[in-house]
Length: 238
Picture 1: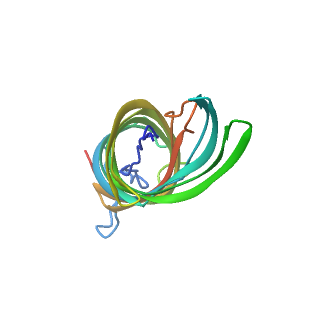
Picture 2 (picture 1 turned 180 degrees about the vertical axis):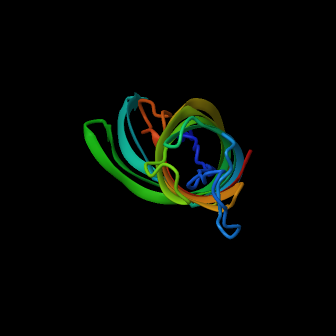
Picture 3 (picture 1 turned 135 degrees about the vertical axis):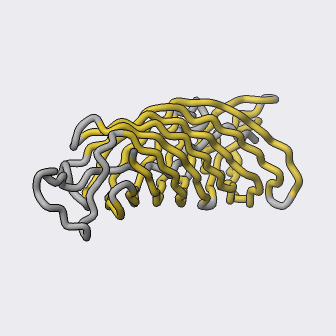
């Protein structure tokens, strides 16, 4: 049995900041208004909830005069992510971000069905088993973020990122029986994001983001890894 499924780069951060309407310096200013910083740089941290999707697999092989044809899926429990990021506001509508995320979640189960053909006879094999083990991943992404309302105290966001996912996997038990299956790999990662951001003071913002993650970890046996991520972040603007 193999554990070379996709590592997850699930992420969570994504903090950003956005300017609210700038006030004319020559006009009187109401001290009760929240006004964004004129600085273009910002730093943030975040935490989130990661929901890995099932990873399907399929194998056809021959061994010892028998032909094996199997398919199934690996299932995971939900996990968490921690993140840090740095961003630069190119203009009122576009910004660039660099982020690093740490993600951890656990295996749940494996389900499999297939056939074994030997000596002219075919036998069906079906079943499932619990899996114990963990998947940890470090995700590095460069993101582009669009804020379509421009200078606004509260603004929707949409964007995407490209980077890598460096993943370590370990299975410690299968169906209650001890095991020691490990794997490590680094793969291309892509993400798409929707969210909303609010300025809470002149130099601080919070946001809530949903992200879909795809990791190019598939091979002839396993499909690529995918996951959903919901995260909350806070940022300081300079």
